[in-house]
Length: 332
Image (tube, rainbow, N blue to C red; front, side, top):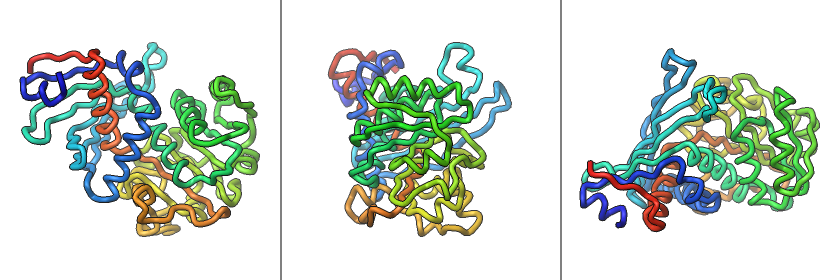
């Protein structure tokens, strides 16, 4: 049964979290996210305002991201958030579920586990930025942050570029073993370094933290570097010094989110850059912006994580689940 047939029969397709790993590949996530960014820039897809709140229980942040893509008729939302105490319970801190609706009728089409999909689409967004903005001769990958998502980010980056070495820094050095193990899995040497040394060595820097105070400073970063700021986005978040955005050409998935809950919010507030200085990465994908203009230019991608990314990867995994016969369908 196809997804459209399931809708016509008043059936809801369910793809449980446990099935996602066997269905969704990083390459498929990359293609879905790249197409999503292109549709956004051509105004064929748009995100609705984000709702994100501290619920006053379990120190959790909870919210909704939603949107509609007229290109592939993906309509829906991702509901979920961040529960910092989950790791102690053997659970992933980030918990989410994606709900897809039929764009023609408004009926529920699918319910999809969103935890692994969120990790894959976040890593895919960073990889898209590397493909379109990083120098092709980049050899050293710098990783800031060693949490659960860092492994996904490293794998996605290495799939895009011929790196020869990984260097890393984390606020809690004892966690760097995750970066070292992931680099070994990918056949690359790993070196723990200071932030200044990380900036001096790295051609590409991926930051994946939940910081509210900058780690990487503008003076740390050498000309020609590409940075991807992929950490948790919320009011007040900050992974790099605001002055760094003034030195760089800034790209993002969605400008409205970048200046309100993303990495650009501090540089905007201080007048270091203007909203008009920020470029949608979809414009580079579509060829309406040249992207990197020289080997000395610093480029920075602010990956804020938009609802359309979640819908794109969820729609893809539903198609795969139905084709492979592993989806569940229930009357609704």
